[in-house]
Image (cartoon, rainbow, N blue to C red; front, side, top):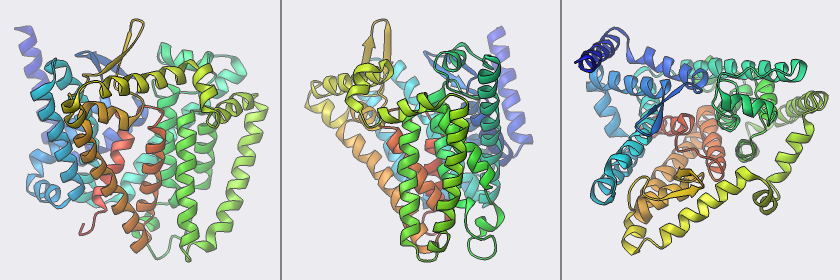
Amino acid sequence: MEALILYLLSLALVLTVLILVPPGKIFYLTIASVFTTEFLWIHLGGGIFRISYFLSLLTLAGFLLFHLKKTLPFLARSRLLLYMLLFLAYNLSIILLKAPDKARSLFSFGLFIIMVSFTFNFYLFLKTYRDEASMLRWLAAFSLMAVLFGLLQFSALIFWGKALAFTPSQKANILLDKRITSFFTEADTFGKNLMVVVLLLLPFAYGVRKGGDKTRREFRWSHLSLTLYLLVLALNATRSAMAGLLAGLLILVSSVLRNRKAQAVLLKIARNFFVIFALISVTVSLAGHSSLITRRVSSLFHIRHTIRRDSSASVRYKSIMTSLRKFTHSGPVNILLGSGWTTITTEFGETRLEGTPNIFVTILVYSGVFGTFLFLLVLFRAFRVLYVKYKRENSPLALGALASLAGALVASQMAPMMLAPEFWMLFGISAYLEKGR
């Protein structure tokens, strides 16, 4: 009886919030929670549940309940979101038809659906309010909060030997690994999140405010912010984020070289980056942090040695190879159609890992060749939309999202991105930028 009363009160609270607070406002709270509350989570049904997950579902419910007349036509116009819905429907059907433990598979897939809800929320917010600049300001503001707290963590460690940590895992990252976590559970999670934001906002650090793209006139990212973000990324020393940042920067540089109008600022960009990296190098050296960063960067170019000597890299590699081995021996039907979410796991002693750090391998072993094809449709559609939008209209948002998506995919080859809201956010931005918006 008490549980029923608690459930009804919770439901009443949620409905009250939905009625009194517009979904756009809840959307801003969702962005804030992604950057400031990631370290807060609870166990739920064998998995973990975070504040941002709840707020994302609440935002989507608000759009569906109170903007239904606008929402349904918006959703029908996006081919990218149609591909995404087909991918989700296919995986759900495979779980219901083939998964041996349907309850566990459905719960795990439910967490994945929550991640995809970030895609729909970003799309619906931008479609409904058409306020790209406000979205970027909130991303910049709350990611800057995470950056500044990360710098505070690093300063406390260097000058006082203290760990400003909220959880034991954060404390271990800071004291043992000498890496900053900010408001995130682990240093790797913070690094990947920051890499995506840097690449998304970087095109707004250059160019003129007058004329041209409307969003560029209304939102400008300062060079000081860029310097702070890159400094914290260096101090964070996440290898997957470094690799993703390099891939994204290559796309940004190549776009500048191909765009004659943008070549005028190339020298300015090169000069600013030289100054920024010089400042970062001096700061890192004075803090005695250069050996850690050099070691982790060099490990990207000596993968075999890293797998043998680095326990984290070794576990990730074994997880990928073990999952692929199980998948190839699962029979032709499972290889083609998949066997369902969480049906292939990897055991390391008493620890059981679901999925792999590689997003393509994870989708392949769960969804099979056909499900992987559907995901590739989503991916290729997103890249095509962003490339065409930037090429035709010189859109800084499209260029930033293109570089971020490329960087996130590179990072996802060695670090988990399936449950990263910032990754699925990029698909929502891509859907918004589709032709005919």
